[in-house]
Image 1 (cartoon, rainbow over the protein chains, first blue to last red):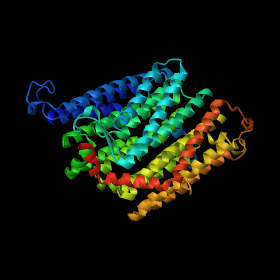
Image 2: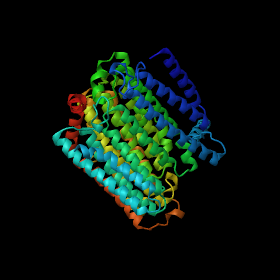
Image 3: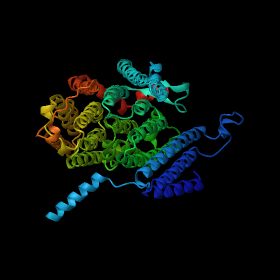
Image 4: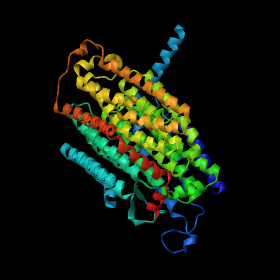
Length: 123
Length: 494
């Protein structure tokens, strides 16, 4: 794997993870898109050095690019495309319900935390 | 035999496609879903019988070389879990048809076909012989589960759906990066070839791959500390959907964890996995004790039970892995029945909060029996399947002299019983609110179907306890095949 590709994967991952930690679903969506790209670049890098076009049959076998990671990458791209659409739909529904696209608190969790705090005050 | 294997994946998928375009014709969808699921169950049964006597069945899709193409492998472990999974989905679908008639259920135009998509993903995840197809299978399962979880668009569902989707999407991305690492270091993603090549890698790389996939599959399996998405999201979905998720989805994570880590010889991770198993058991049951809603209590119990299966894996002995497989087989129907009963309670009383229900044992004795038997089984009381499954695991733990995990597992059983008793006293004993104490006896045909489906699943789980001897033999043989993968490798590669 070349240093450039490694840096690209690292950069995409760090920006992606930073965006995912946001509470806004649209930012998370962008984060997941970037993470997906990082994974795809990593897959392509796993295939080794780039070479001639595979499958078409106009170059000797040992000069070809490895076609398998490319197939993996294509599949992953298609899947992440579908998931991006689903996340968009989810964000839109959340905006319809609450007026924004922020992830809400876990109500049950809040309730139990409040109860424990109240018990702590009594003691 | 190999064509039957292909049918298992293709038939539910085709039926789902027709179901999506069937529009208002509900009967078409019902015939398709029940028909294809019954077919899948029958095929799974035939495959189990065949694999048991003749050995592993391998389907090379498109007749490609296993290093390049997709292979579907039915070994003993796959066939065993597959049969239980297909039968469970079939029962839940019958329950769903009944529930629809009582107007509490999920949108039938979507949920039936989506359940079939999920089914074909489940089949693929159990049978696949390579990691990339496993990734695709996970995505099939997850995408349909995302939609099943959120399609009603209620506020609680969207909120918890976001956590669920975010966690699982992140795990999927990690899976892809892990695939890249595996491919770069071994030049293949085929499990049989990986079983040969990963043990030959340098220790740091091997450890890295093992830990990386422990995180990836652990998120799907909801092990400590990666379980936070589960107890929040499962209770918000309609009963039938929660029942399938609870019975199957996390178990697929465990199944894959067992398969990958045992095949590639990750014995070094044993102590770490055992520690995680203990934490998963304890945290899960502690969470359950703090809840006061039937569905939420049961959701936390999924996590705690995952700990037991993990314990079997962490031992990395024949008895331990056989115990984990048998526990898996016991757990799927039991957990499903409990959630279905939770759904029946919710339907009857309009809520599943413990403090709002009471005295159901008097008004609904049948429901009380349907809950009590699997609850006792979950806690591990003899003579139910939970007892024998847990005994097998504890026995395996003592055999390898890992005392702490055995003590924790036993103590945890008691705590499980305590929280089951909590549901029992909250829901089935006492007098309940005065206004809801008027017995509602509307036995619509739909309701009968729901109770019937639950009863069938319960009988299946009792049958598991009754036929434990042969089941244990199968589990032991399946574990032996995993621990010594030479037969698996030969079946796939040559």
